[in-house]
Length: 283
Picture (cartoon, rainbow, N blue to C red):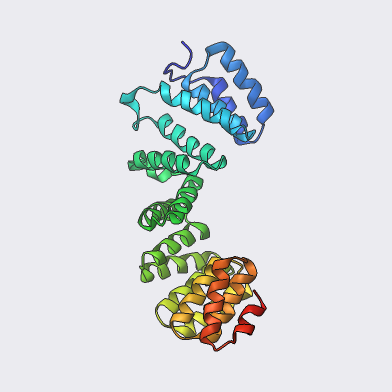
């Protein structure tokens, strides 16, 4: 029957998967239509169909196919069946790509909850990156760190170490943050945000000289992340380094003009003795 639990070793489904991997979307679509005519809409067919629809940016249709596939898996096999994990992973991506971030987070969380044992080594790097970014936005830094450590272990890259370092900084784990950011720095000596975060760690520890060295590198390689400049400005302000704080706050405002950044710059200028006329000149 349609949508039934069928573990099919279909040559057509295998062919469709390979075609989708190499971007042969049109041919994959023909193969999947042939599969449907021959064997109906099995669970594996629905998953492959969802992948096809996702490549065509037909996210709502892909979501429907994945929900049907998920409903067809017996409760006794949920969590232990690789296809269940694949459905949750893809649902996370499809929701994320529709900007349904809450639903994306839920699907990703189910995916990672059941990704245990040897399966952890096959964790999807894109799922790792997306859920870490969602956790960071929600200030769920411990969860962000935990997932990023899995990501770093099995798919080490500048981006994975960078996300792990950012989470550790938010948790106040500065020594761990420095360690993972040094790992990132060893992979790419010219990544501006890595240098920016290393500068933040040095300022948090009160080492202004080391922070300036890292900041010099960050600027040299084109740091343009307003949030990093804001954090650097705030740290410098707390240390009483007002001239440096103002320079950094001005950089933050240059890359992202908003009220919060303007307020930070105004506060620093007040402490530097700016008159009211000077304060309002650039606002």
